[in-house]
Length: 591
View 1 (cartoon, rainbow, N blue to C red):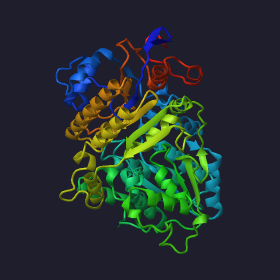
View 2: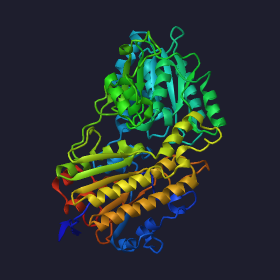
View 3: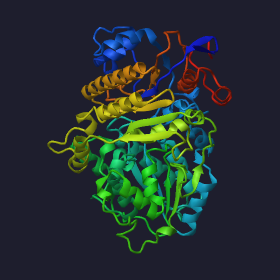
View 4: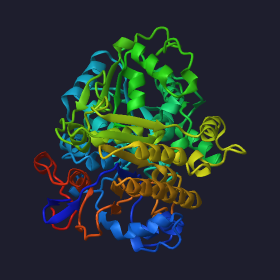
């Protein structure tokens, strides 16, 4: 039986199907420092080129004849991003959901006039500090990566603070080294100090009014922007440094960076360090988290603003053993004179649904998405990932979904015990003998073997209403280490996982789409010869396995994946998708 989508006859699929996202796996022709090209990946070679002799399973050799391939645009204006902004897991998954995506930078940039950010909720926070003669704390990633933040936004907020009479500013400096070169923090620190000097000698100020700028804490993004539920202790280390001034102490941020570099650590692993005489926040202080990406802002904001009862339960229920016996989380246990309710806390964006504080830039609710359509049509959708990308898969339902939809199951595969143990020991001893390698350099398979076992189990027990939405994090998480050898091992593990999952899907009569959210692991060196630990602007692969081989449209984008998946699943383009999604099926004559 066939159904029509445009002029393409689509077969009917009677078994479970899958959307597999190879997180951080782009397309690049050059082989040098390209872990996709350098790795032995017989399954991907078979899908791409029909070179199937070396595949591990003889059933793979038939799959090439039912595989169609194209490449997709993953960054830039075609997917709702500003020119120059880098792709990311969060953006990629939201675009893959089929929503009419608009990057938060559009909203923020439109509020900047003559280098000054003007927003009523930011102004209200500044005025609160001015009225109480208190400090304004700015928390965020000091970087130009345009993935989590943009240093231009920090400068625009600083100018607004000075314009409205703020006189005491404390910077909580999250160093990058992942979305930027690994040892680039000193450059941004110098830029920030230059901006301090420019503002402190600006026309807005007089001899009678000066501005007291200080970098109060510094810490690497792996810790300060932790998003793993297995590592809440990292978030608390950041929290204690900011709120109570607790942690290792040094005179200057340069000293903290030097200590990290002397141990062979990159910017993202700098230990949260308290600087100078900083003693934490005081009553009536203002805190503004100015990152614009949600997933790596959520945990710190929860620790800052969630009701203590809710936060305590969340910590106790987490896989982080640190909180197993927690009775009550104490926000200010070492500052008895702090009245926490006097703090004025603002998020630049809503880092998670229902965030308990003012939000400067709210996103519109998105009415239609891949997840919502699957739920509407009674599908049982399983979302399977490791701990690092669990939040990302929720974005396949759009940006405003908190609890699972009807028919949705979320499965987070824990890290293997040896890796979990190493991560905790690494955080205590990083740079010392035996702890020179970053965790995902040492364990590039991460949790992929256990994840694959679970996905295959779901497929083998499923039916035509069973959909598995899978994130394979290895290309991205290992790509961020800049280690080519580890990257090759990661891609080999991904290849084995893809083969097992796709063969299982086809054996049960379903189809599989394989793509990525952005590039990373295919380009592990910059044009300047530095290690490339950050995302690329390359196109990403798109494989369609199941329907007879056909020519797919060129020039497609991530927006087209959800309409393609739904057309294959339902056998036709439905009106809700035609009207609500900007993307079109990738069948050559179907869009």
